[in-house]
Image: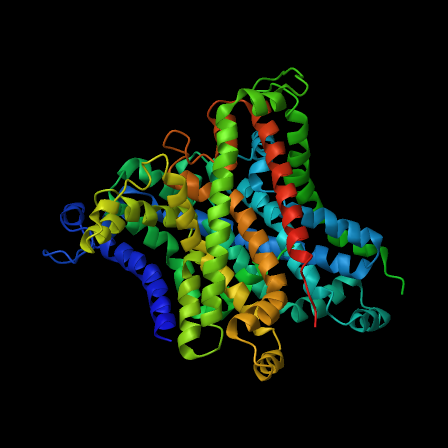
Length: 269
Length: 291
């Protein structure tokens, strides 16, 4: 029993200590960090890093870019994926199965496999240094997992439901919007959270397609702070906190849904 | 019951985007892998399978990269699965404490790879870092290392970071799998006088196999996709010792502009992942038991 409790405590500290160090370092100066990397500094805490990072960087711009890209990527992925999932569920034949296979095969292929041709495609389409380009690529990269989760869910809905309303003269679009979407809300919200975390944190696509500061998202901006601030950890950690804040706040309030969502995303295969 | 043809309309937006931005580039990777294209010139030559033979016989960095990826994968899969399973067994019951702890263990999963990379670069920092300071503090100063600067050590330091990052997520999957096991099986085992170990090997483990399959398969794929973390922490260095296939493809394509060759490596990458996934499913599915 004691062994178990101490194991739990050790793991908890392994998570907590690094996080506390990040928060503490962000309110210290570089000199204070060098003098005493882990302790509370003698001169007291200060928030100048937060002021400086907003003055030295276009943080608000990066933040907006991340927000716009994430919001559109998540909502459009959900819309298009639930339409595909509904189509597959209603078809319920070999064409549906084939389409399901075609869409979900994308889960097995890491993004790095297609990044080279994708890059030249984006150049040809003039979609580099563009938030629209980023959103389009994001949608296609997460369609497979979203189709997989949503089809799995929609197949559990009773068929009679669709058939009864079709008999009542409702077209497919009406059945989709008034019956299937409301009933799929638990699955949709779980998928939404999974997608939010993925798109908010993604580095690869911005790294490939964005070079102009005006279109950079937070993870890419953060990565480049490394070149600028080197081992100025107080500044780097201030950036980390600002970039993580929305996810952390959401996690504190919607914790149950996060766990369900990210687990749904993991259960693929 | 006949359904209206309008159902096909539902596939259109998804299918168009998916074809343009996923299927087309993936298939054209196969095509470009047979060329010497640099990514920018209007023309290129077909070179047959030259890129593939170069990868396996003329490029020692690529072979090293595969080795690094396997080392990283093995450490991550073994440690992450064991840690997740061991702790899932402890926090299995729903109490206020266990629910809080699960949420805490899960927390790193919501951070970005870049953030995790910064946090762990600080932990591993040879002079400022928590790890070396802690070792000094408890009298184990002789164990201090340059965790990310030592070419023999760096890939394992990265693997530990990956475990810290994602073990909580796997723990949650195990908890879900464990909670789905019917309680009466444990009661029967108890009545029959089974030891704790017997109960685990005869009841828990066989019924946990589906969750274990998911955890191992997902962890493996994740370890191959660890581009963000590796790129942000070491950029593949020192001396290519943490170069994994994904970061190497990026360098070959976007640092030395050999798109044809990078495409060939991408295709090999895809094949490696397909083989590993297939083997895992075969190994883990075969001992599945239902009661």
